Image 1 (cartoon, one colour):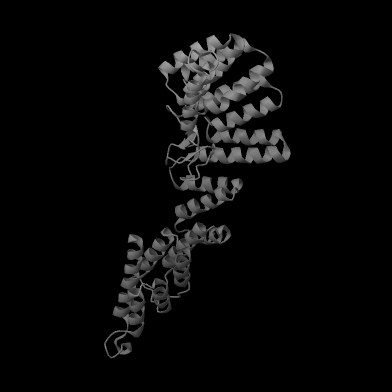
Image 2 (tube, helix red, strand yellow):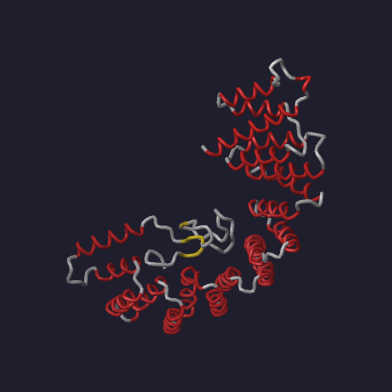
Length: 384
């Protein structure tokens, strides 16, 4: 509501400026331009589209009004009224009286309109035109990077990111490393592992602690039947970012199962637990204890761990293990289990540490704030 009032106010201001600049010999007998009265009438009747048409029709652009027109277009874009913003900026660009800098400002604004509306090809052309002018380079490259990420054109994204890096001291190595990981995945699907591994090496050049690259190498070595080599990469990935341990853990277990070495697996799990206490790790150890030492050992271990690290997931698993072997009535245990399962149902598993976006799916590129590597497993009683 507030934004709508602001938009109407800006249109009214522009109409007032138009009135002030109107030659005195073109005024009506009342001393007011007819167009101004028509536009003002539309505003009073809450018909901003018609008022905007009057404004565009009578558009007089100069150094006194250009910023106001751009502000109005920006406001419409922010409100999601992109069509209105486009009309304003297109009409600005069509005016021959604009200086070079003013025209480039309007081009940049129009590019943002098309970017917001998802018309990426037009937005790209406009941003490239702005770049050719050597003005507003950082803004234009930033918007281009957004387009190339949306369209998954990773080679172009890398080229633009490097140009941005030259313009700004901001370090974007982590983002570029992810672009190379994306290229590696695409290449692996189309051409196999050899070229894909080369892209992962490129990722390390931009981010030597790239957890995603280590994780991918581990997965590919495991798929190739090299579990020992894969374990090395998985350990690297956990060291680089322990938050992803719950995701990597099943692959570590699969490697040891392939090697048929249960003792080494248990030693690895206990070592990891000392360093990174996570409920997924605790439950994995519980499963292994159940296989090797029986239910009692598994229950005792889980009870001890839950005292130190309360967890709804852990409690739910504890109740599951107790069913059929407890003095409590099974129906009471089932009730407790139903309650814990209802607490966990539909709960997000991951959260972006930058903006708080929550999801059940791991996404390397946050759909909300567009940060890379910021979506992590949730830590706490309801998570890890």
